Length: 365
Ligand SMILES: [Zn+2]
Ligand SMILES: [Zn+2]
Image (cartoon, rainbow, N blue to C red):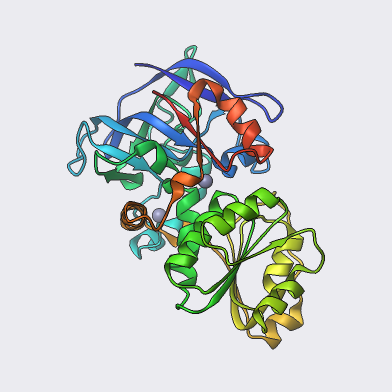
């Protein structure tokens, strides 16, 4: 069938919306009519080739929509189901079998490279078109996803608001709720207050962190951080950030989370910790990036430094929890989203890159 899709052709070219063909869902797959898709920094990192995945390619990995057809052997999902899409995983490797699909042996090939059994289901002008980014490629009106990366949701939910749960929100909230799991009354510093950082701040408030320090270089983002639960804010360009955090907390924070991937921010996110603190990094900076951290601080304070992919979240377990939190008003992600018609994908990306909007969501219909 014919669909519309936005193709990334080269780092310096805008996305081009084309009409192309999509095939039928195979065993274990579903065809989803996309209603909305959030834009995440990983989409832009690939388009800009900071992550070297071959272009041209259809990107988009925070898709949400309605199942139109199911492939052979799919019994848990049916035509008409509302679904959110998240990252793909193989299901067979040791980490998948141990409940950690976010560290699937094939995470890169399935998600970044979009490898699908039988090749891409997309064709353009008679030739195969690369897709299946994060087992979806949801900058499109239709996608083929797998039962492993599709989460069924209730039909009465605002699906376009929830689309970013599949990656950005899951990453920030999961790094706090799943990885750090702070006790009530502890402190955390969050570096970078885009959608990921703001979701982390919401999560820190949910679990009862009593000191939540947001660091960013944009004053309007720091205001947004206060709006969703930050108790203190620091301008990232105002001098020694780690020292300011130590002054606020007395001995440093119990936890820190860096969403920026900037070496200076990561260094501060480690130096701001108190004894036995834990720093987590979730960003995907350009290949070759190195983080300068003070060795004596790591050993002397007994620190833990951890990287986290997709918030250590099993989508079918964690996304329903996030939806319950959203329904109860504790995870107000509707405050982060700005909607754009699919045709205006390039304007949405411009406004994301200038910081005018926090989480752009494309609406396909
Ligand atoms: Zn696996
Ligand atoms: Zn993402």
